[in-house]
Image 1 (cartoon, rainbow, N blue to C red):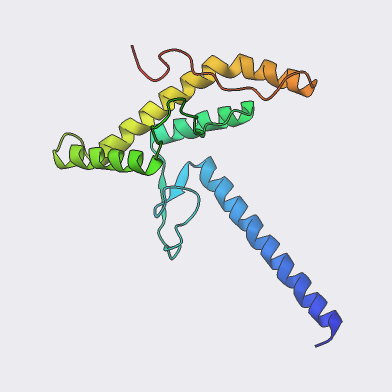
Image 2: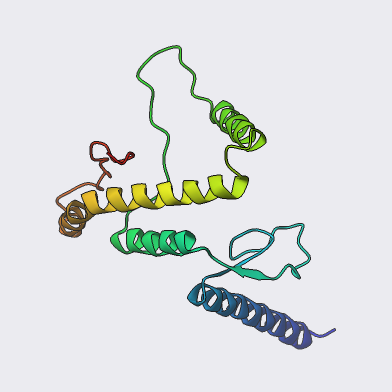
Length: 171
């Protein structure tokens, strides 16, 4: 095989890959416009174990509101993903695995006792997440905008998101 032919084949392969990537981007954009997610994962991506024939489902109203709230956070440059905090108390290990196992045990007990179904718990989780994210954004929005303006002028460090009092509970 000549170098010219190898070069053409390589270029064609790269063009094909770019076209496939653009199709995936277009599909994801179209799905989000319609608030659709894949059934296998509940997201815009298939699980590795999926044969890609799982179909799609429309997000629930709360999931749509969460998605829209996340877009508002993104527009402000705010990060909705938590970060670990340093524990000032010596001798208390922070282990996310134990926290996760405790939560899973509690969920299983609630579902097995018939108090709530898994779907009801998921819906309540989404509602609480939406309320908390909305309240945090609203409490920080003006400060974040002002901090961003100061950062662009080179007079301020990256802003921290401040949790207002009682941000997690309805009272």
